[in-house]
Length: 384
Figure 1 (cartoon, rainbow, N blue to C red):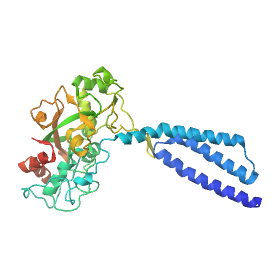
Figure 2: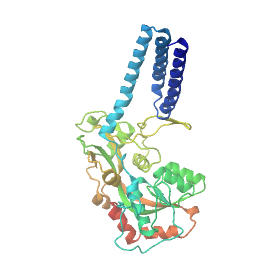
Figure 3: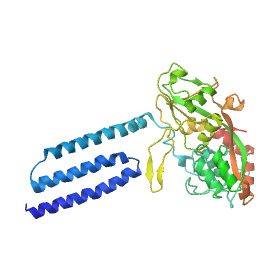
Figure 4: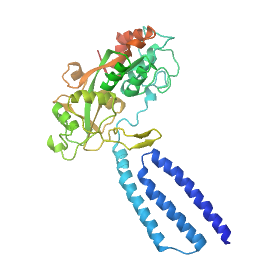
């Protein structure tokens, strides 16, 4: 092989590797794995140098071989350090990650949304109120739409029956993109935003639910006090042996700001400051760096929280155990008699200044009727 051909091959291979490295770098940046950039760049550079030496120079460089091996070892160590915990986290399970909300969509074949046993006393064919809300309440208001709205496709992501999660649902309501949302009470931030826009929320209680805390089933802790919950989430209690015979450092998971469950935790904490949340990967994008509160991962030492229906029915994870609070189990009986400390109403929420047609109030009135309350109860919540 003549020298010119060898040079052409080296240039072609080098250019290909550089282009691949560029796309790999973009992938690393957008998935929060920028830590891999330097060792990957170094390995690619050394590989190009090795290839050039062997193809053109027909010799070997022991120094280059050593540096290449060292870079590979460094990359391997970083990969083990970063990825093994994630693999383990997936092994022990993340609560709620595998929920397919489309299974609860109205009029879907084999939908899990509750069907009324008789024709609804209230039917709409036009001027349908635009609905949105919390994931945990989607099965409820999806069933409302199934009973009242005309039969058609209602995608949870692009229709008049959305499921955007609590924080985004409140944003949609404030922006007049939806008419009613079904969620827990608004957070302090949402109240402040509404006030700054000259808007006011109207909250109509439509059912009751419990806010629950849970741990891994292998964790021996089964009861905590309200004070202990506050101390765990303020950082005063950091080890399980401070409240039980269980050992290990407590891993307290939190949800993103303005989510329904995080807002509920803030109300429980009162004036007590919540400790800094555990973070998921730092996700880089064109808009900058975003840090999110981590999803609950079912480590033995972890503690998390949610609403009763979501934790027991939608997530349906038999590897967690709900904690008693002050010796009281969270269930429909203790919600109804108000003995469980963390129970309360969930709401149909509107903006007073945005109501565009009477069907909004008519639908809410129907939700409060025996048929609407039937759907709430059969879904798994406690009616009024």
